[in-house]
Length: 221
Image (cartoon, rainbow, N blue to C red):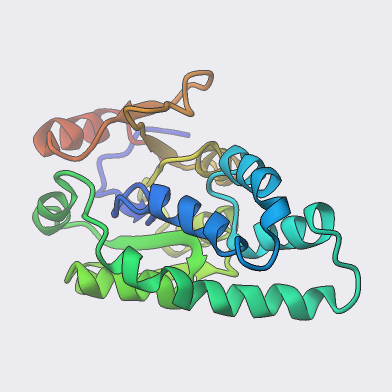
């Protein structure tokens, strides 16, 4: 890649980047199985915490098939829990606060901006509207879109402009590597998934001017 003086395109994951929602989603995903499969909850929790950022349908496939052991009508069961999960988590997610500094950063950045999330599309729209930032984004990409595919598509839509993707999981970083775009990791106090990779990281968006300077100096096409 080469340095560019043209205005970068900003792409944001949702959970943990725009909204402090990841802990809520992790907890509620596990609670969703308490009444139906209480004996499986410890294994579900272990798998869930080891696969932060994995699309919910993929999590459900593993949980229902490999942990709970469902074989008959598996796809129907996955679809049922996927639909149920949207309503199960909705109220709590709408109460989740934005990541520190992100609202001001979005509103002060005259860049074309996108959301690229593995969450359900309706869930993403709900949270953007709750935070009153839906109008900040040219387009919202969500499940079943694959992040690497979306980032590659955006590179083609904006030739000659650097793509900067913000994510909070190692899966986000891997998507950026696959698509060959710039990446900024959002690390959390309790964990930094980027310790073993070459990624620029920030705790939040409070130092917006400093962040813009880093992008101007380091963002590549």
